[in-house]
Image (cartoon, rainbow, N blue to C red; front, top):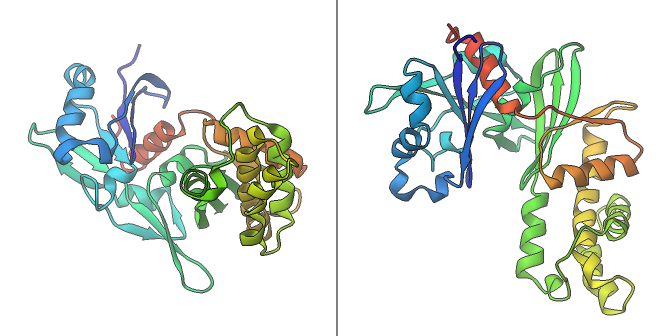
Length: 305
C-alpha cells in the first residue's frame, strides 16, 4: 500500500477531528476527541496536536499537515485572514498560512471566507470552506449547499467558485430559547416527534415575518393541551428551521434545483425531513468531506508528494 499523503485536522470550538489521508484522498485512519479550542487549557494547541497525533507523527514525520476551523480564529492557534467571495480552490491554496512548531513541524492553516450581502453587511465562515471544497460537484457550474449546524450556512457555488453565502443562527437560537427562556419550562425531553416538528415547520414556513409572535405558541399550544409536552421542543425546532428555509428558499434556491446537505449529525436529518416536506430534491454529501477538502487544497498548493 502506498504511503499516506496528508494529515488533515478539523479543529473547532468544541471538538478535534483528524484524518490520515491516503494517496488518492481516501481516509485511512481517524482520531477525535473533545479538544476544541475552548477546551484546551492555556491554549496549548501544539501540545494537543503532538499528543493526540503522536503515532502518525512518528510514523510519517514528513507528511504535510493542514488545519482548518476555529483553530484559525482570533481565539485559536494561528489567525488566518478572511478571503472575500468569490473564492475558489486556487485562492485558498495560495492563502495558506504556514507555521513551524517547536518540534520543527510545519502546519498549514486554511483561511476563512467573508461575504458582503447586498446591503454591505459582512458574513464569515471558518472551517465550512474546507467542507465545501471537499464536496464540489464533479460536473456542472452551479450548486446549492446547506450546512446545518449551530450556525447554519447556505452556500451558492458558481463556476466552481464559492460566490455567496449566508449564516442563520438557527441552532444557537433554538438552544438559547429551550434552555434559558420560559418556552422551555413545559418541554419534556424525549425521542424525536415528527408530528410536532412538521407542525412547527409549517408555521415557520408560513410565518412571513411573524416569528416573534409564533415562538410563543410553543408554550401556549402545550399549555392548552393542543401539543404534547414531548413534542414541544420539536415544534420549536421545526418553527425555527421553517423560518430559515422560508428565507433561504427565497434568496438562494432555484426552481427544481437539487440541494446538497453537508454533515452527519441528527440535525442534518431534520433538514432532510424538512426538504422532503417541501418536496424539494436533495442529496447528502459524502462523509469526511473535510479530509477531501484538505486533500484538494494541498494538491493545488503543490504540497502532496
